[in-house]
Amino acid sequence: MTPRQYWQQFLMATMFLTRLPIARWVQHDAALQLGMARWFPAVGWLVGGLAALLLWLCANLVPWVPAVILATALAILLTGAFHEDGFADMCDAFGGGWEKEQVLRIMKDSRLGTYGTLGLGLMLSSKISLLCSLPLTNALCALIAGHVLSRTAATSLLLSLPYVRNTEDGIAKTPPAEFTLTSLWFTVATAAPALLLLPMRAWLPLLLGLFALRYWAAWYYRKRIGGYTGDCLGGAQQLAELWVLMVIVAL
Image (cartoon, rainbow, N blue to C red):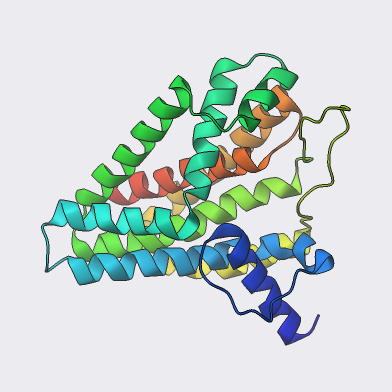
């Protein structure tokens, strides 16, 4: 791949995960799209950085709690609530479905149910509460690290799970992305600098928790539906982001 193709692949990943306006010369390329998942942590740097910038700007203009809420809202607006929607759908599907077909049917339903409402409300309130308990510098680092490391953990699921989707004829669609060991090392290298934003004493519990969450999610998704969907990845990202914030607050 040429440097221009790498850049195009990053922009395609940004288009996929956010609502940011992207240069018009970026055209859809099926071959590049298959490998764009390697850039998801890089998109996390972008979203987390912009949210942290707004938090820093608002910190001296409005009270702390509204500043945190505004920064959180910006991250949601930038992504179009992409991951939050996936988490809510996952809560509805796994909470209300038993058989694989039923779980996938609920997950595909655009309506928000009881499990999704409760899960999303608890997730957002927990993240805002954790950020509010931190001083400004720590909160800025937590915002960035949370967005980067959580996307790395979620993306790594592509390596060990097949893509599944409920279709009328029972045949799974083509996976939206391919992920190899080379792609994994690329995402790890992209995300690793985020650890430098955190105290070293947080590294071990943070990484152990992310590994445990990742392998639990892989086991649970395989057990319930035989693989992953986009909603499953969004749910894993939200849970991983919450874990990052919990560790930073605790330590």
